[in-house]
Length: 229
Ligand code: 5RP
Image: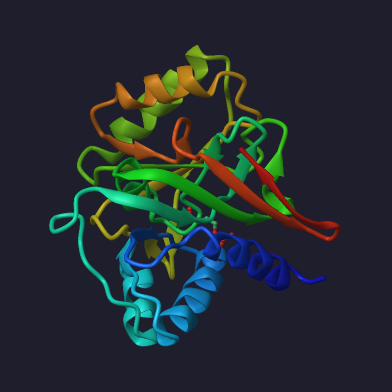
């Protein structure tokens, strides 16, 4: 079974959690896009659902496919959000931000009663850190922030390359107009300590570890779909 089919299977299982009348957060990335396609088909069949997109990319796709959208300003409390992830561990801790939308994804997930993560089995890990950790940073003071991130990680016994994410030869810009540092620390033994240390750096806007966000992970693999709660 190819990766796209697995993503579709996970997305299909998540759609079963969507109820008529809900306002839901809609994630970003290729797995979330499978969910968006299925949700659009349900909306076309008459299911009344409204979405809050977690990125401009997701908003464009939802509009093209006819999913009604609103914003967190109009609806600040959501029933749930459905999103992909770059890594999921067995305690439902995540690394997100491979698609650069981590800040809005985290804001939307925090505003939701529950977060359902959809992923193929390649995303399931014993311990976070194989995927480089995306860290969204203010453009002002980039070098100082990068040095502070390095020092903070070294204090926690982590080391590795921290690189500025690029896109077509220029620094990648998030929807919020920030840069992303991708930090290859290796396995993260204490995600909470790293999270606290990163949050203490003024130039860090947000990082891609979602530690107390996910309620359910729907993982699709060759032998079927499993749910971690
Ligand atoms: C975007 C994200 C995505 O959810 C994450 O990168 C997974 O993407 P994909 O489903 O394409 O593997 O966090 O910021």
